[in-house]
Image 1 (cartoon, each protein chain N blue to C red):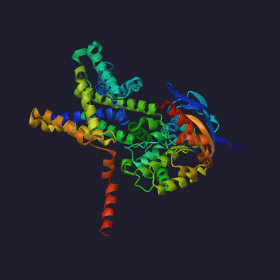
Image 2: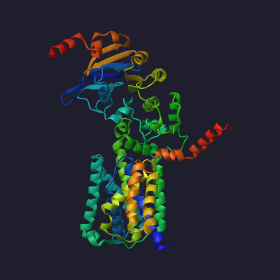
Image 3: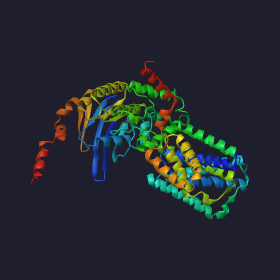
Image 4: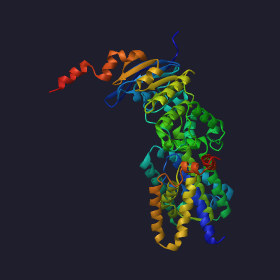
Length: 263
Length: 289
């Protein structure tokens, strides 16, 4: 029996003016699977993330998260439906402390009137704060929870963003270049950490350029080029695919085309 | 207490409540340059309710807060469609419209103003200021406060955390309106007279300065900003007209050295007793104790 899809994209298309940034993209990720999304710069990877998380509406197609169509939902309701993401450029709130940033990630679990207006910061032992601090520790982030995020290293902030995204207890976690800027040890730790959380049934979609990280983490890969899906299959086969190689390195055909325009 | 001292204390209390009325939306990233308009609505509501409708003071004040809060709620919808400098202009226009309306409406006394027969003592002002200050501190310590601060930092990313940004901003604007209305009601009932000319754009600018220079990251900001900018000009009276020059220079200087406001969250954290304890432990460890 085929596994129930954690995320299914059916014919997603998005144009800005005359430019089609995502062109009829369809693929599925089984629930609990780890999928990589790669492609050259400008291929539409972050645009696809923005469409799935609802930053922009899609033109056509459908987005199904664990059986529920979410493409009509505003972004905040997609979070409630089980979607969480990180950002290519770290988007931690610069004037919130580490633990406040993480507690912000808990919002959809605690936005009843009583929770919204109950004392949160006045009780250092509130269960929300304890949960946030425990999650930071579990992710191996050993920093003062009250420190300013702006004082921390890039790698640490990158990992705090992953922890924040996990706080809403998502069903689908989308990470935009989580390993960029991390040193080899941090990258290995992040990979082990992501495997450990994915074991609990979390579906993972990761944009990443670090191919050894991708090979280590993701069984399957999709490749985008100029907004079109050009490869979907096992990660180990991606580097042997003719079209993928052409997209990254340029093909003979493209070279001939270029020569055509040469004087 | 001398008349001078109690006059200063009354203005201090009113300014503080007013500043928190501007602070609450500002903490959620909304700059309100129409503060005087909200204060005027509170003042005229209290004046009319006590002099014409003959309501007792204990009913007048909450009613004035309710009216101003409701107007804040209604006005937040068009205002929240604007961003940045356009929001500043929209709220400024609102403040001017309110003052213009009151000045031209004979029903509210027009340019002559309105005499308010009811009176509240300074103790009521002090208690109200303390209550509003505590409420603002509490609000900032809730998840609602966390959401407000997050919106101020990065609105687009806050949406993707699942926060209903619009609802938080509307609530902040409404609470801010109610606080500004309270300050107006207390002004009317303490000074026993209101006139539209008092609620001018300079007042809106001053109270916004208290808040922005004090800092919008924590509830300490408006407290420090209001204390400094209400008391400083009084202490400088001996300097004659030069005090305006010093005042202006102080504002520019503060904006240069503390662009995030006098008080920031990081500063409060550094000054917390927990930090001092940690530092003592660290120093002790360095000295092998």
